[in-house]
Length: 83
Image 1 (spheres, helix red, strand yellow):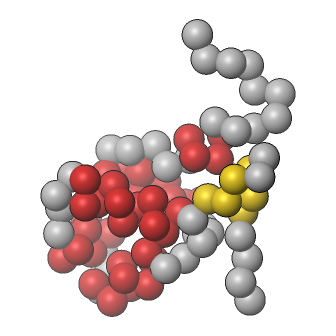
Image 2 (cartoon, one colour; image 1 turned 30 degrees about the vertical axis):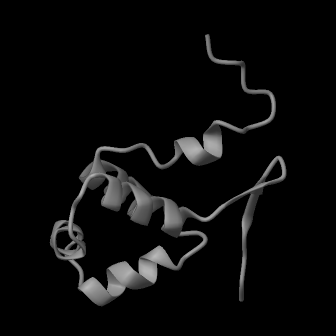
């Protein structure tokens, strides 16, 4: 089943965003896999996912020191504008 998360007309592909951040930090897939206690093959599968479990997203956010939840919450309806 292919499922996408839409936010006000914007599709978030979280796997691609995680991969981009990993590359931006110039970290290796091997390093990332070790930090997440998983195989490199699982990391590559993660990059293909359009959505993932929230606990896993939290762990990834901690490992990469990057708030991946912001991609979802920034566009919530009724959220007050940032100052």
